[in-house]
Length: 234
Ligand SMILES: NC(=O)c1ccc[n+]([C@@H]2O[C@H](COP(=O)([O-])OP(=O)(O)OC[C@H]3O[C@@H](n4cnc5c(N)ncnc54)[C@H](OP(=O)(O)O)[C@@H]3O)[C@@H](O)[C@H]2O)c1
Image 1 (cartoon, helix red, strand yellow):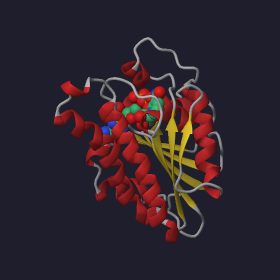
Image 2 (cartoon, protein in one colour):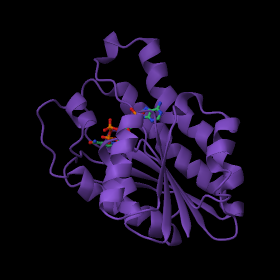
Image 3 (cartoon, helix red, strand yellow):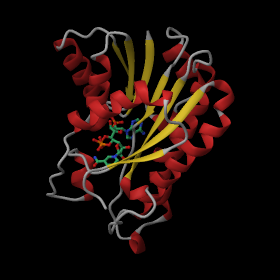
Image 4 (tube, protein in one colour):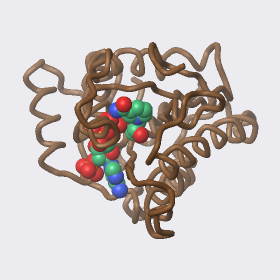
């Protein structure tokens, strides 16, 4: 049995990835996010498909404590895969952004991820290979097209990618592999905040299948990498 933790599972890419991961009966999926109703929809979608290997926990990653993690993970003992998918986006011209905007984006996209990884490290398996996957963005990938209004978001995603590279080095000795997927555009509510009216060529259910495959298999071949996953952004 592989225990897989995924954050930001109440909607969008995280919702579909959690569902896709639960499609493998050898997985147990532990889905986190704040919106209890969204998590209830996820639990129902899984139950409708006959999956009984998905648990949901409403949690705000911004103030997750060691006690919360103890309560949630006591019954699992071991975590094999962590998908850091939760994220927020602020779409505002750089000159209008406040330091609070920057802090808010970095608090969720980077610092909450750092906190969760630190809290989960004692639970991550060391005997078998385990895998941490950060969900980054093409906006945070060096050399790609950049877009107005996304400076704080893109910078936070660049940091998340760099964190995957450095963590991969530090966690080598524990058999934990770390990668970052720099996603291109996927049809979700976040994409509509970034690019109102734009229809991406990829839907969240399709991207979810790729992420699910990647986080279960890719660590046997890939470590410390930031991979662009895009059919559009140059
Ligand atoms: N869509 C795209 O085109 C695209 C492209 C590149 C990268 N990405 C990345 O892919 C990931 C998923 O994006 P999406 O498009 O699916 O976005 P979304 O539909 O807005 O979903 C974001 C998820 O993050 C969760 N979240 C946000 N703040 C949280 C917090 N403090 N604590 C717990 N959960 C929190 C939200 O859940 P609650 O509100 O319930 O907490 C929600 O489930 C993000 O990291 C995003 O940056 C998306």
